[in-house]
Image 1 (cartoon, rainbow, N blue to C red):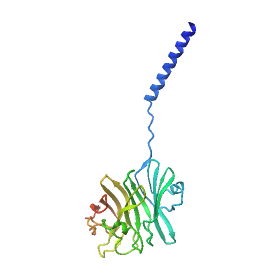
Image 2: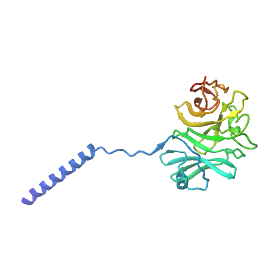
Image 3: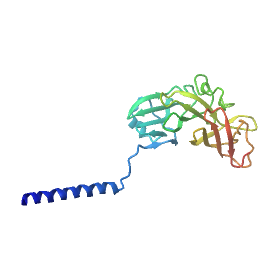
Length: 250
């Protein structure tokens, strides 16, 4: 009988301990663990190749977007002493799933320096161009889009915004984005600073030199000196700019 009472007390104590621990786990605020997401990244272009590991590319601290265990990087390959070609690569769990170096393979000194990814099917890349050269470049993707070519002249660095299939890296379509000198129509420099997406339209914020383009691609009229902070809101298919604005310009 004495043994039975001791056993009952032991089980009662054990049950109370279980309840207390359960209550503690329920009431204790433990932050949930979420997969890291980076939707937008624009910065200085870095060099890497398709043969580099993800660790090597990541250490460059270049532009990248991430969703869970998938990361997409953008940069350039130094193919000669005076020529760069853009490169874009995707890794899943540290394993390369695709790498594209064929977007622009001409003597245009092009790089990749920006990405936006919604984590699903919407992926945009930002590339630079310094002029049109013979061979394959972004013009073949820009036919029928807002601005289909680099334009007149060469040398000033402009932007190319490309819609990319995140599953295989293929470019669906692209548009050039540049400034335009009102005096002679020559192309002038533009650098993209930020991309954002609302599910329908792509907003591009950029620094434009003399002079930003209006929605109809003509030169704006500006009352101050360049550069100008410029915003263009594109339709998702890059065929049209719904609105374009820049401080002190109309």
